[in-house]
Amino acid sequence: MSKSVYIAGSFKNLEKMLAIRETLVNAGIETTISEPLQANGIDGCLQRIREAEITYILNFGGYVGKSVAMDIGYALGLGKPVYALEPIEDPGITHLLTRVVTPDDVIAELSGNSKN
Image (cartoon, rainbow, N blue to C red; front, side, top):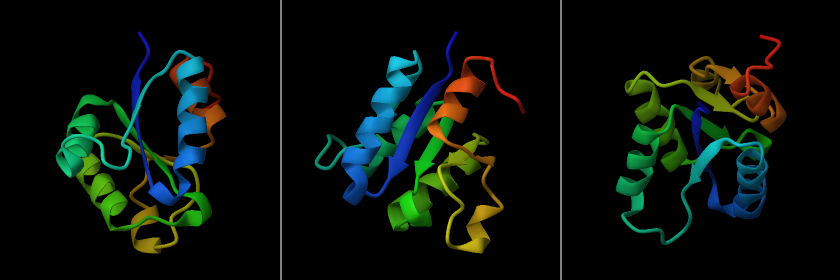
């Protein structure tokens, strides 16, 4: 059974985030993402974090905004792993990540082909 992933990131990178979501879905990984003006706003985001096994932060350039920082804290508070695309610019947050991984790394790990 495939693990599920919730993708979080800045909406200014929405097109890139949707492309990575498509890559994960095409690899057979159940993947959810929040989009602007989506029903239930932040409550919907938190629900998707609760339902996913992994939260994957797509932080292009290392950037995370306040909402994504909250997503990270919420996932960690639930005891869920948090992966990120790049190290987070704020060194006080980076050490909390489970791993810094590419989408291909996520696919390999969740399909049982990880080198880690």
